[in-house]
Each structure stands twice: as structure tokens, then as C-alpha cells.
Image (cartoon, rainbow, N blue to C red; front, side, top):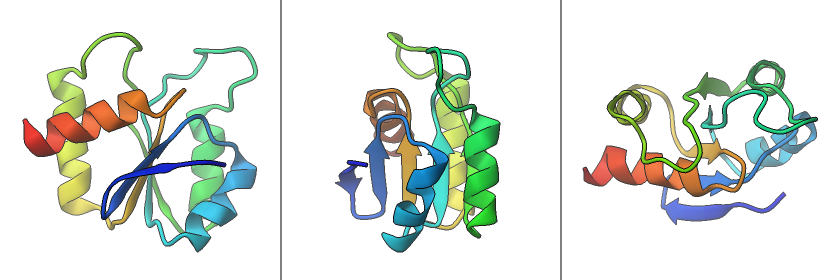
Length: 111
């Protein structure tokens, strides 16, 4: 699994699987954010499946799905801001490629 740090406490990645969770935990992340809607691609793990693995590892999970190809909605930005203000960091966010997760963070932190 590859990920990119876009801030000292925030990283993004493409789609993850439950088998990636130990590495995410070992890297020190405390909260995992799913920005990918379920059913976007055949065979993609659901947010529920990832969330169960994340919680079983003792980490926090939240799903804030956002559509591909459009800027984050105000709801996505507000939810991301709430996560950053209330849930433990550092944060690991994923979508299909990591781009949407990075856009959500950028809008939430820089307006």
C-alpha cells in the first residue's frame, strides 16, 4: 500500500483493503476516512468492511463519500472539518486514487 503525506498529520491513498489496516496502524494513524462511495467499482471493499477492520484494530473510522469528478460539496467540507476538529489524528484518508481525499482536506483546511 502506498500513501502520500499532504500535511504533517494527514495522508491520502487509493483504495485500501482490510489487510492494509495493520500497516496503517503501525504508521501511527488514529483515524481512517473513507471518501469513496460504495459500489463505484466492481470488487471494491465496502466502507462497512473497511470500517469493521479499522475499528477492530482500535482505530476510528468515518465515511464521508464524495462523487468523482466534482469538487467537494459543502457537506463534505463541513464533515471533514468536524473530523479534523474532533477525532484523533493523524488522519489517513482514501478514495479511488487519493485525489478526492486530498481535495476534501484542502477545502476543509484552506477554504
